[in-house]
Image (cartoon, rainbow, N blue to C red; front, side):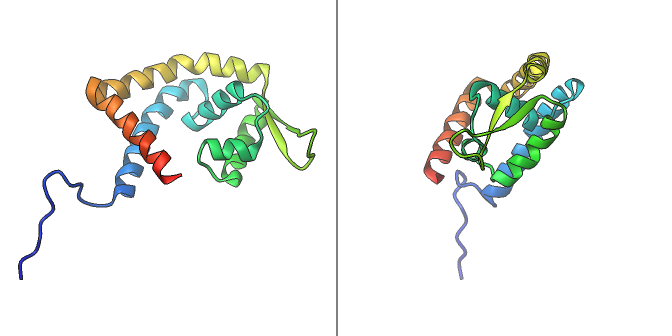
Length: 147
């Protein structure tokens, strides 16, 4: 019996595993660059979203970040304890909480920006001028297709 072999252009193996491994490697680079500023890449991203989307609800932010609301809440807690952001009851529905960046959060975000920029440059250099934009486009299309 003849077995068919995948074409040389077809990916071999689990796409999910590949994406998770790549995400972990990239996250390690960002975390290392942000560590001197006392933040992880997830925390930096949450602070950035809180700045850009001031007053966003937890559920909406979870959807935006493709996260489970419970996981998001768990990730917000250390930032709350450090008083980098606050959760305020929504005036329309007191059961919901809206996220607001504090002055300390703005300062932490601004201080950590050079670390984030350095990580961006490291990853962009590794990908090169062609693969970087191609990967970003592919990921954006994948997110849209799987929504």
